[in-house]
Length: 360
Image 1 (cartoon, rainbow, N blue to C red):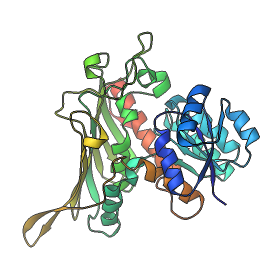
Image 2: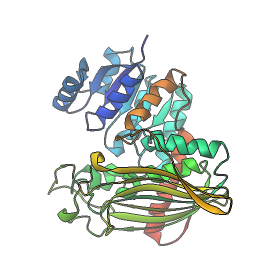
Image 3: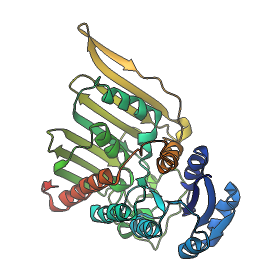
């Protein structure tokens, strides 16, 4: 029998979860959203048979649900995840894991007690480039990664002014928490070392300037709150001696949108990169994956060829959730890693607020 999945949240990311779940052979039997009209529209578009305006009602009427995906504003990730785990469901939660590390620890503890899988949509781990680079990490080609640089930078990428993205109470912050993918990917390639100290700074230039909005058509809310950063920079030292620098922004004076992790290992260096065109859309991006080595006294840069993946691993990440439930594949991420990532994000915000380094 196929794994039965319900989706909580009718937002734009639902299409990737749906595609990935179905690729892995799962059956999507319901979609719940407080906005029932949105739930019905998304369900109709994707052929999902039942919709609900209440999660409690959905769980009561469909006890056969094996797992849920959670696609809602960040503030609700932790409570909905905990509710679903306590109802005996596996959970695939959108990023970020929660607003703070303490919330993720509670989510982890609940999953442990329930004996259920808890995965997060760190989809850039599921990109073909990341799979390929991780093989070079595993086979020793790269050696130990001493240092890495994580970037997700945008020149014009504010996702609507006054909406939930720019409301810290709902989102937890701006691009630092929204675009944490490359920080996660860098730490993943480094072996997820334990953070030691963090130094960070945030900037709010341009955050209310409509000239710096992104291309996604998310409407502004004139009565809404805008109290998050537009850019963040930081430096992390790990107890292993490794280091990580990071730069993330929605609005910053850079040449173009860049999504990348570069690293320097004891045997080789490398870089995974996506460069966007002026429209900021996936269809016009340029992906690359490279390995840097010394051979016979020569500097050799190897281009790693992989299949194209326009959606940055989003569908493949969702498919991994199903295969992990079914025991067909190891999960691409763990709650422990999510806790460590959020401790790092928390510490960067704390350092920015205090102007001092923060011990993790």
